[in-house]
Length: 163
Image (cartoon, rainbow, N blue to C red):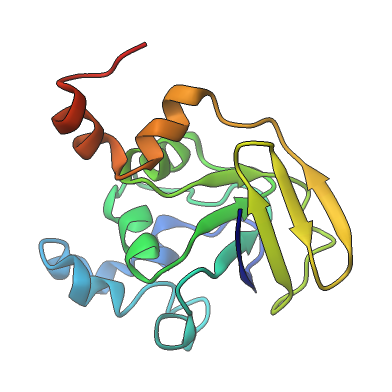
């Protein structure tokens, strides 16, 4: 179980909002690119987010280009998981590949700054602030194993992907 603060965003947050295109030249310098994570949506995000916090959004989070560095820089900021009503499919897969949990639930009852807890194994998000509980279908065991370091690390450790 992990806990942290919610950073609330709306619907259709694109990969260009996550990793602004004007910093595309920094894609080979991810720590520098991470300094600009979500700055066009919330200018204070990268400087104020704390390790263990959560990005919470509405529908279609991560839409747009595939930019695999978008979930990587969210993770580099210390975000524990992204919670949204729905994800662009390639963004969702890229989250898993970099070891960033992506959880789909109804986020309409979660407000900015609220304290949340996530239990990935049991498929539960608890809003500690409001005392509410949201259930989601837990990730399959293989995907949970990939989250421990991401796909590259998993393949390096295990010599491939065991089914």
